Image 1 (cartoon, rainbow, N blue to C red):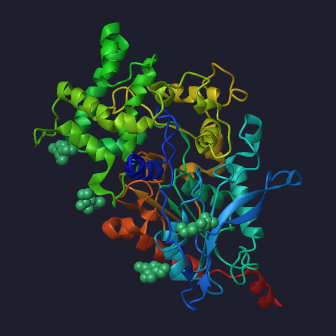
Image 2 (cartoon, rainbow, N blue to C red):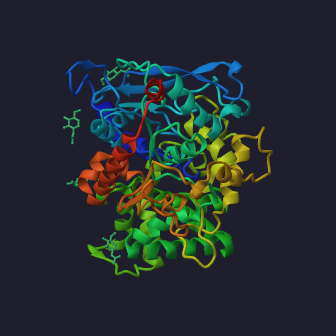
Length: 529
Ligand SMILES: *[C@@H]1O[C@H](CO)[C@@H](O)[C@H](O)[C@H]1NC(C)=O
Ligand SMILES: *[C@@H]1O[C@H](CO)[C@@H](O)[C@H](O)[C@H]1NC(C)=O
Ligand SMILES: *[C@@H]1O[C@H](CO)[C@@H](O)[C@H](O)[C@H]1NC(C)=O
Ligand SMILES: *[C@@H]1O[C@H](CO)[C@@H](O)[C@H](O)[C@H]1NC(C)=O
């Protein structure tokens, strides 16, 4: 009975932990992450013939090259999933990777629960979900020590997509002759994989006939303080006023307070075990990171809104736009933490393992096992992209403590990968090289559709950044909904938010047009003869 009870309590927690793709340590920057969407269980039926197709979770394996610059090094198994529910001869092949995580649980990206399946349904195409190298079970090596991560680069991932498209023999009828020369391929991605969509189309012109990039973080940025700006602008005004007031108070205490004032603050939030002030300061970011898991279909039920309600509703009355002020907000925030938030966040770990980032023996840094996706993602962060989610610059209102600067986040690179980044260095990634190679905001590619969300915390790294104008053109369209991160990938979101629906409709129309001119290379040869 007790077991059953704890299982019932656990289930919803597991489901929400899954959807949020949290970092293993609650003080490290969040990856951008495509929200999982699962497909229906059981067999699928072909839309025209009614033939029974394999269940969506049937796993296929592709022999991928370990090193595209040296094919002699051999191959490893890359997992993918595939269905041809809507496929008719001549239709497009729609390829998608969820990017920086285990691709199990993404079968919804094979069917019309997502834009991928909508494109397939409209164009009579087939769909594929492929697991990105070094995530989930797709790994060339049996552990992720520094030396084994050598082939974990954006360029190798782009080359994977090319080699897969040109080489794979799909299980569907005729699936051995639908390479990109014979059939139009459409690359779809969201978040990091949305960026990968843009970067691949820049790097391999002509390989993909069209692309759909949702919340695509095309520009690598080290000090990504703008991450918190959409939350600050679109959250309830009273809540942002009070968060700013509390954070400013926390900074004053942590930088100029007496020892006893500092202990008192830590103890109020259950953080007495933390010895470094910046770990304490960083912990407050967690409530703001919750903004990332909002979507139109969760509506006002998300944890982020529960947090604002906890701060702003006192005896059934909401504060005015200026909030209640620091005295009430500090206590209310602490109460919210101690009423389950911190416990849920740390999920049985000690406070030091959960929120401490200084101990090199923390399992966070020493676990090099395959499937430790956060480690794998951190390798890309430390080497190529950055995106440290930190305090706003001086003079700009900040929801995050000024003690949290890129050096705080970058320091963990040496703890994760001591053989690559010597201890004591605060290595910053070579983002200039990334932005030059793949063109970042300067992308200029035909038949690429960018879909963004006005309230997406990652918007400042996309082509819809406020301070970086990128024009929308008929060949490279940019459409913005009121949504959050990758909201427009999901059909459920479109069903509750007309602006998301409008973005999807515009994309379906654009992609339909872009597929029209496709001429298979082989047929072209025949016609010339
Ligand atoms: C696929 O899903 C079904 C139903 O949930 C399950 O019984 C089966 O074991 C799964 N197969 C794989 C390969 O995961
Ligand atoms: C989505 O696909 C299912 C079949 O898998 C079909 O029954 C349904 O009508 C489709 N939804 C829409 C909106 O077309
Ligand atoms: C104050 O906060 C409450 C609770 O989050 C919210 O519903 C309300 O809209 C906010 N009011 C203002 C003026 O910001
Ligand atoms: C929010 O939660 C309430 C109560 O559980 C539910 O009735 C409502 O449908 C939910 N709203 C959304 C948008 O999920």
